[in-house]
Length: 368
Image 1: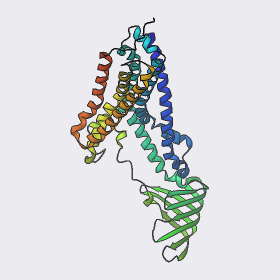
Image 2 (image 1 turned 30 degrees about the vertical axis):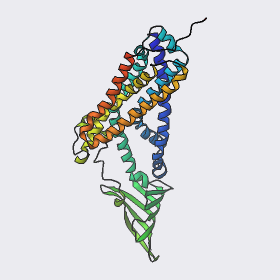
Image 3 (image 1 turned 90 degrees about the vertical axis):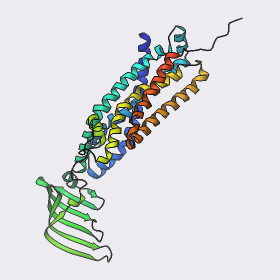
Image 4 (image 1 turned 45 degrees about the horizontal axis):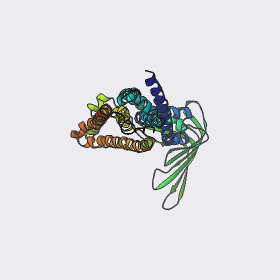
């Protein structure tokens, strides 16, 4: 029991370090996608952090199997280099017995991956998409920002000097290039924003309209007491009618309905569902494969480097097969059993290798 705790603690600590490192790298790279929400839409930093944290379960489901595999390789390779494995083998420990603490950590990681895949990811990703939709369609918050030029779209720029209660605004400049034949600039003393089911409309009062013909470069001026500028055409969407596959639970994926996706995408949804049932097993299969390579053959520093290379190559190959199998199964339903074969067969082979081979160490020549 003490041996199990000794190895398990080291594997767990190494896993946490790898998880933190990989997750941090992914978080930094993915966060750059949302910088425009701060620049163009004035989203608070804490909202952006919360938005990215909702994606954390998706990242963890990818990172956990790799982290456990790397930590197991690190711990057992270090123990081999320090001759601890040789001492334990001399004490009568079999390969499967030596692998037990690492497999305990891997089993916990597998259970976490299943919890993430079957429940946490759909819930968190749905919250992420809903919040993202609200931010991108918060026209009042975007249009009523004071003292900055707001890019409502690539073709519409708006400036508001002062925002009063009741969506009343003062000091308004609008530059509109939605029409390919002319660009229009509005200057108004006051105005009022109205949010309608069809989109926002801005009613201007006491201002001028300056239109410039793109071809002739002729400019026309119009003074007005009141003028309505319609922003309904800049809407990005009419509502969240469709759901992303990451938002769907396993029952919805295995039994797709038209309300979630068009019928032509049913094959990819079913393949995604079976992928969620098989991919978490990599958190157990990858360490098993690594241990089957490390804990067999001659235990020496000279041979450990080659075994590490072989273990990593097997892990990479399994990841590629699982990803490719998902893509192929989305097109050909008869390949879905291959998703299970791709993870179960290597795991079974690794278990048989650990059970069927004794550790061998290089014999020490007798002293003369």
